[in-house]
Length: 229
Image 1 (cartoon, rainbow, N blue to C red):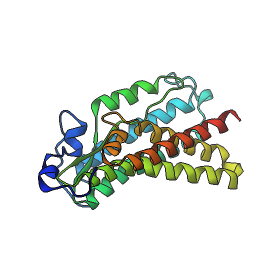
Image 2 (tube, helix red, strand yellow):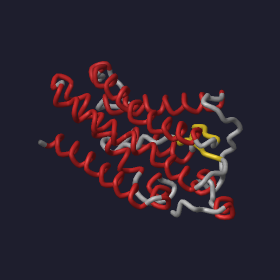
Image 3 (cartoon, rainbow, N blue to C red):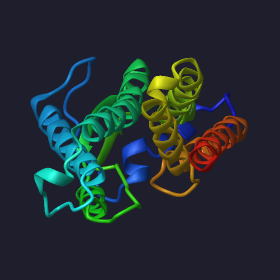
Image 4 (cartoon, rainbow, N blue to C red):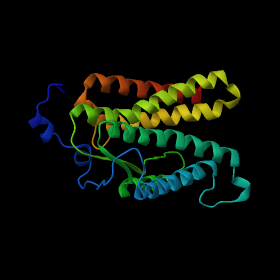
């Protein structure tokens, strides 16, 4: 996308929220704070993440028995899921607000239902109960950087986890899981189809898209290799 965008092009550029969802969510406040509605939505998302980690740490879930409950696995999975998901969404919010855009997290019913559905699946899991909704007018660069912020923080976090894995082998499982899930979330979001981040990044800057896409694939592939190695 050209940097010398004139005012007409700026006004014609669909905003992040309208472009991503057919029914835009209303975002009423700006500033680096959280509204009560946003906090409630974050709490619902947190509950879904906890249930997801519970389903992973209990083989017989939802038929919970004391003998099958692994408290250590549950704590590790919960911490890792929050480390992967929350920074991704909060980086979207932070970068959007840097460009004076309105930004709040909202539960997306279809996404939340899909996340809830995968709770009962034995292997395949999706942890995307909602997203940060963006509203306002800005240059295409602002929307592109806002979209890129989420996958970028996941790639950075995953790469850090890989390094820590070799530095602290006693905590190898925790760091491997962090790298694996960070890589998966980054790769999934970089798929260039709406409403995922990759589609918006590709529209803004093909070079930035290529770097993030290749990085997310490399991280996810390497973490997957460590699983079978």
